[in-house]
Length: 161
Image 1 (cartoon, helix red, strand yellow):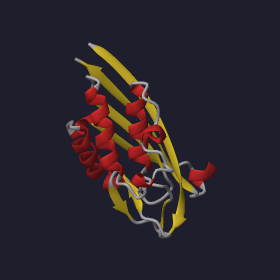
Image 2 (tube, helix red, strand yellow):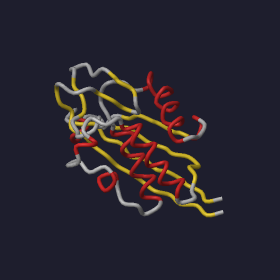
Image 3 (cartoon, helix red, strand yellow):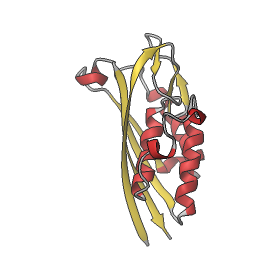
């Protein structure tokens, strides 16, 4: 059995007037902030997509969904994730598991994690127990700690049966 692992990272600025979407869930930030980006700016899903693409040396999401392409303006990142999973499958690979950690001071993510895992698992075509999602703060350090943005690190393991 062949295995491949990839990692991904994303960060987006928090701004007023934008929705806050993480793991496909629309959340409410206490200050009414959301993530700025060309698509829905879902850093969790973006980091997962980069991990999947990286595992197969397919570049990053900017290669497949360029921010200067109007087709992707406001795009639902879960739909983009489905397209990335399609690329993985076309090449004869399948997802074993993914794991991610979201770095945000607020809002508290724990109440939303199970729903995020279920949504992501559905788009990956795996059981929710194969999707790890964790949340941590940055102890008020750096841009995430100052609530200037939200970031995510992710890894993906693929196998070729």
